[in-house]
Picture: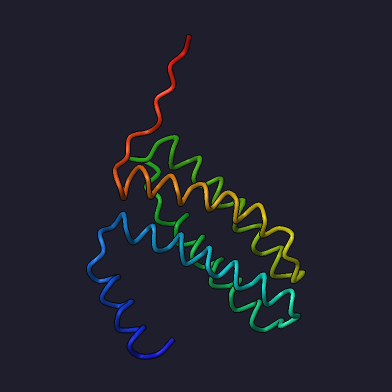
Length: 131
């Protein structure tokens, strides 16, 4: 990343709302996982390790940022999902195996998209009408 990109990112982070910052963390974790997959396939062990450590750090930060008292069951369930993802990232990093990353990407993308729709953009959840 060049200096201009770093400056742009710094400004974006400084001006982002807390909800947008969480979205940026999700995006960063997904980006690191995708890069790790490429590096694992290319047998670039140090680069794969670096990207997986980035993803692990982000997921750990997300888990540690949960307010279990105010968040109730939602926070507890998110914590369990983050714990699952962290374990899968560690397994992938230890074995340099991209297979565990598939489920992590799936779960993380689902959480990310729900966060973007519901919190960042404020879209109401879909309404289902029972017959």
